[in-house]
Length: 119
Image (tube, rainbow, N blue to C red):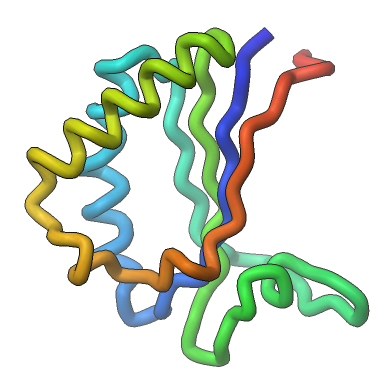
C-alpha cells in the first residue's frame, strides 16, 4: 500500500492564487522522483473546534484559509529518496525564493503515514 506525506498549513486567503501556482509548479518535481499523486486542497468547510481543529492546529488567523494536502508514494523507501531529490530540485529550479513562499512554514504540520486501509 502507498506511503503518504501529509500536511496542513494556514495560507493567507489573499495568497490563494500564489499558493496554487506554487503547488502547480512543485508537483512535477515530486512526480519526477516517484510520487504517485500530489493532492492540494483549499479549505471550504473547516469547522472551528472547541478543543482542537485544523484551524487551531495551524494557529489560523482570521484572514487565512486552511490547506490540507498530501503526496502519495509507492513506499517509504521511494518517498525518502524521492522527497530529498524533489526538494533539491525545487530549491534549484523553482521561480519562488524562500522569502516569497505565500505562507508561514513555521506553522506547517506534516508527517509520513503508512497506509493501513485502502479501498
